[in-house]
Length: 496
Image: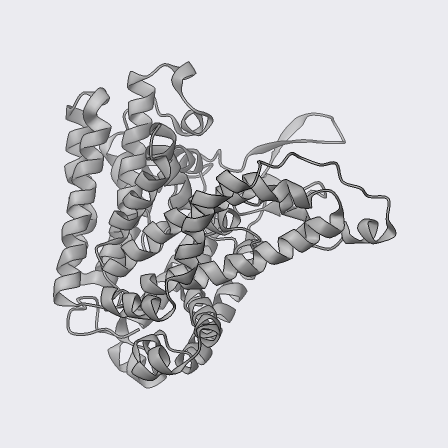
């Protein structure tokens, strides 16, 4: 990742960045997250809800977020307040029946202008840019608007399960609103924290789960420590950073543009190289998302549940499930494990509200939210095609493999291999960004997987009867052993 003259963040540590071999924006991001990790400890202890008024907690999160934003983006940080300020005026002045649509339109227009500005003046850059935090703020402001719309203009029986979980019945005050938008734990890299979860956290109700006291049999509240989860996630983030820094230079994505790679290598080698380099590129996202998740956990945000042994899980707001994604046995499972907060956001404001073309509209919004590089649209519209094809194949073929655990395992191994070939094949334009370079490579690969997906959509329903569920024959010793075979046999119910 390189950064040019367009970076407007602090240059205080530019000498140190040059000395250790990082760009200034990379080092500033790391410093901001380390500072946020320290502030998170202060937030959870000295500013605990039992010791501090909610207004103070709101103000601390807001001010810390603004300082971090200014450190990383300089005067561009004004956009961090500008977008939510415009949307807040719409929220408090417009009819709830139309307010959510207006907020979505304004927020996406504002974000799109910055995407286009960056694309025009700093084409192809992966440097730290204000559009990243604004993408998260866009998610926050639109999800808040839609949840208020549900609470103020719709009947409860008309809401979906997800909408009921996030519905809001009370207009937030200006302090609540802006502290939610700019809270320091998630300002740089997410994850998206939905408004109800944020308010529960501020009030101290995010982890007050009733437990039984065996001595007096009274109900007490048990407040768990996130220390173990934080340490584990910091270690994972550092590991991903080391992998990214040490191995990606050996398999650069830019090689895909080389004439020799396009014209002088076999299709099988192209698939192998695309799989390796896109896997390494993901490590950058794993680092940013996992360290941001650790910051949120250290604040006390993200407790999902207690396990049967009494230990806690801190993954309620995690952006990614790395293990599940890398070992996904279906495209559906991979999509669900990647950028999970964005998946919920898309479902909340688009997928569950549209009756026709919901998949296409969802991918279209996701592409627009990311920006206007043509590579994004190649990836997302390809993903829409493969998602539809995977559904058809699953309905008509999958149940033919559920008769025994052996056949289920074989099916999962096959779908695992196909899924990761498809992921490499459709995601490289997202990383490459450039349209013609991506199309040139697709032409050399004869658009092979696109053709297979299209044929599956057309031919499978016509020539393959829809399969019926089969009972598993678990009498064989091999089948019994394969029940313990790991994620493949456990994930068959999620295949798509």
